[in-house]
Image (cartoon, rainbow over all chains, first blue to last red; front, side):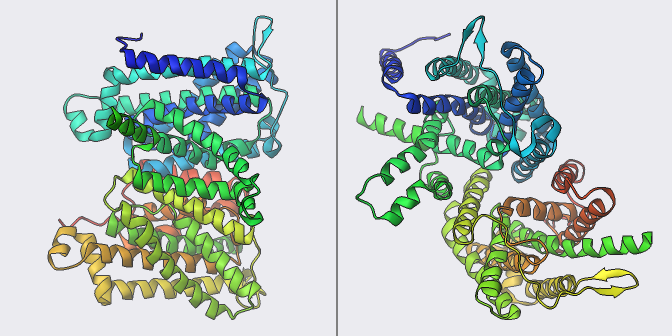
Length: 330
Length: 291
């Protein structure tokens, strides 16, 4: 599972583990909440990294897969009274089916057309959720989603949920890391670099595109399930195209060529609003500037500009920057 | 009665179709010259409506002066957009281009919502909007204005592409990039002109459409998708094809609204896009490559 580990890597892992435990001990509820969101977004962004960074397929519809996971798990557990451990995996499979359907379009479409097709899927999902009021609750959403429990042990506090999300995120991370370093990872990279050449050396390109779309959607579904049972109330505003865009931001700003990029990206996107709010509390700045740092619209503008400049100036993202700085020092 | 109804629906379809046709033409111009789709285009269309609202409703300007200002503003926006946003990513992978234009689209949309608010704003019609009655078919003057101004813009674009030097240079680049370059046509200048004309058309379309829909209100991405759908339906490589595709798409939308249901139109249009992309990716009017 771990392969050969060098001393340097071991040190990094030890550092990560100690950081993790000190976070649990030191963090208050607000920071645990941020940690849970980072974990959930990390899972979704990892799926998108595999799709976008490895296989080179674009999706501007990941919030829809995220939403399929959240809505089906929420509905199955609250309306149909299913156990979380049955409803959760089922919802992930539903998200996978959605991914398979979008993957079918990716066989014939590339680039611009594929991006448009995924936007279309996202819009259809949003309309469905808004209009199918009897089931989804429409624009008002629905609540009373039960917390997950193992036997009689309920995962009901922030600390427990944070640990729960962290374990799943770690599992997802190890799974994806192994997946990428195996044959399928190399196949996906070859599809990214050149589809014609890949099929000429015997790779079944449509099969792998379907696989990677399904897998990526299932990751988003896992994130959605965790989100629904944490928030315990969901409404369509959490699954709009702006969230699809935010997932892209995580992958691209973090670094799309490595899974850890998704980690840094999700931390970045989750912490940025908090950071801006913190900056706004300094009385150093004039009031008009402080307003900029607390307004959500300004946050979206800052995201947009950050994505643009990070793609132009830092195509490898935060992770790539870190690696190049680290290598120069040593 | 049914016939009157049909004509009424067809008329409103052609009106919507005119807007889709202008947007499709905007996509076509950029696509043939730099082989990319500008995902921020819809946000610019919606910006056109908002600038029109500011000039006409807030500043009380004459409609036609305002229309001229909007078209010129579109040209300036196109020049700035090409120079500052597109040129640094000119030779990057298509994926980068898609995400960068989308990101800038978000910036434009949120920026305009800071100025005009996030709610859609009602706009005044160009002239007195009392419907004329033509054999039972109600015809709103605003729809006639849209038809006339679209015709004007399309003819203007055709003249520009067929009879001016820059237009000819753009068509030459579209046909064969390398050969055009050998003849001394600067591809960067061509891309600059492509964005100027494309966004000028986009803002123009946004303004003449704003009295029928509303101005603004976070619909940019929908405009992007709908304009692209029109262009793909007709064949994005052909200008006549894009225009006809846009018109056809408008008629399809109006038929759906008129005879099936007025709800879920958005989802229906997205289904249409998926169907077109899967079954007819080359469009109805394909242009043979002349290489």
